[in-house]
Length: 564
Image (cartoon, rainbow, N blue to C red; front, side):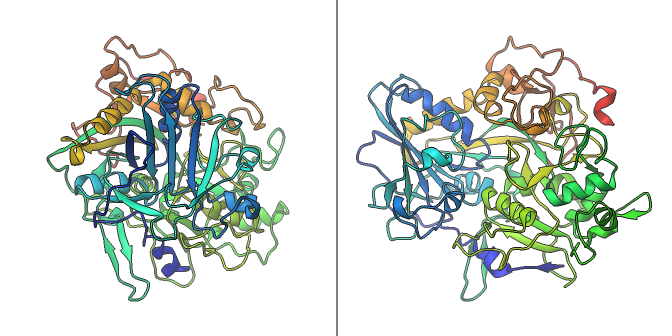
């Protein structure tokens, strides 16, 4: 298998956020408290939405990193550049307007979030009690960019800010002092920490001069002195480029009648079986023409539909997250049993010059850009952390990637999610047990407050408690996601349909917060719970099979139509 731009891709893990050498703790002179969070970006909407409750009507300032972009003034900003803002670091600052989390009205609080490096960043630094690099906002490195209010906020802050009243700033990260070392008060991972071993052992740094790569320690057990708290369940999906989505529709007879090419509804969504997806993700299928429907190859079906010409290159392209990503770990656990027993299959890395082509990406934003680039064939937005385009020239191609289904809610990017074994990745199907590509996240923190930061730990613990409340999962996470396959048009704003996708609260969490909580008789999108569990043996393992959560009162059964 061929890996394109391997050195550039791996060098994305010379991540400025990975630092084992503690430096001076980052502080801001105007803050009473700085709170440092790290890890998965999937729940940033929840985190910042709940923090917004602290601010009340007080002014809010949101800071984003500029993604290594050379632009350093509002006048020089461009919409395309904003696609990479806030992928690695976010900072949220306000004066407390509502007493909460043990904070008093009038306290100034600054929340720092490190996303660079993915879920492992919210695990290993806490397990090893080491600092990480965070974004400084006091190094004369931040500038106001009011144009963000009209083009849309980069990254996800959910319901946290009103763009009309908030101050939005972009900060450089490449100058001395732009990044400062700080302890991690709380970490968030899409998957249980012990998945970060084997194929998921996270990179720590890469030396471009020598080509040597160093890694964080493998996580094989939970060390003493660390508290793990279960978090929300997240629906994972299989994203494919829009051009491939249409080709699959044509091959599977989903381009006639009410299903036009590109229709993004349950009835019109194409499907791949789990064995086929395992073959693609492991690199055993190197060309999409290996797929055949009723004796017609996928390529020929696309040619017959006028989607491509005979010269179109159907080599498999794999947009892949770097090791340490919870999204990647979830995919490898579900499809490859990795890390696992001796039957483990490994994802593609290198080998045959004939494909598939593998593109390693350091964050979810560049994962989306990779799929969008191949889906449009017109731009080169996908970049490594240095700002170097991953593709040397625009090229349309069929590609597959790694994402959770809360992404691309308006279908504005040139990729779509598909069914697995004929089942769409909706929360109704998750609730009924028909769709099981679901992971349960975790929160981590030092049992004894790191570096004596008692107040910060109390804030994190209060935030975690809120994260276990189902209706807050709806208001701060799913309510910000509008998957267009729910209604098909991409314009509906209702979250009450059965097509809603995204997050659900494990029912054991809901019961832990409210002992009187009762399981709904049917899926309730306003009160999304997950009645299943990966913790049947007592310890959470997202690589294991799912079964009924011990706190569930009954096992929901899928309607017959859900599995068609």
